[in-house]
Image 1: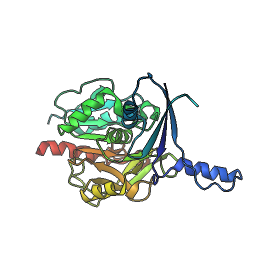
Image 2 (image 1 turned 45 degrees about the vertical axis):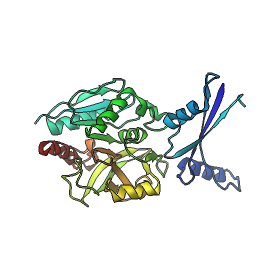
Image 3 (image 1 turned 180 degrees about the vertical axis):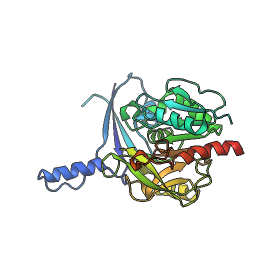
Image 4 (image 1 turned 60 degrees about the vertical axis):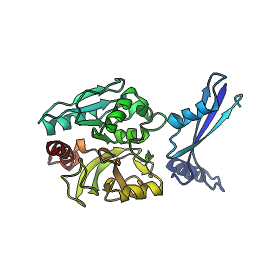
Length: 79
Length: 229
């Protein structure tokens, strides 16, 4: 089973990388970019009977640092 | 006085030798070197030191992989028994990832690696690490990091300040850290994490770039706390 975990910085946590990329986009002439936030996509291939709580535990214990990050879990066929 | 310190080496640690050397210079006794894959720590430790570096190449998040290593289970258990733990730079990142200390260390606000000697205000001079400093004293200690931007939510920051758990504060903005926090203590004051490197400032030098001696006292404080215990 394919699982995609999207890890994002929580709102309010400064994202210096996003800010630098935002600045670079403006430098390239792209107008109208309001904000840029950079997250992380983690793709897992797990046994089909892996339950949601187990994946959630993986996120909480390692894949995301819940002090600064939130995560969403998508299961199903890879997009 | 017998003094037994352990220095943990993770793959990618690069200040472990400096830490061991500083401990030996101050205590006169060799530090025990412990590999991250070991499941157990030596007995009767007076200090566990987590050194600086780039454990696991900073994969995932700085300190995240190291926090899951076998030896960290033993470190967490030892901290629970009150064994003093000092985490410097990457060691601080590991301590937050292991949840032995609150908060997290984000990428520096200016995006750049910061490598220079900075001023620190001693905010708490009552802990076993800081008792020999005067409260409000300014000391100079080198920093060298990319992810030293201390973050915690406002409630946590207020609690840390209220409980006197901010050990050191930068005298001027260094990396974007919330409230210029450079080092924090656990609730029992026996775990200290700090981004600056006291082990790089243990002997006076005519060359200021070589770090000075203000960090030596931190190690002397740990020894003194044992003598008075």
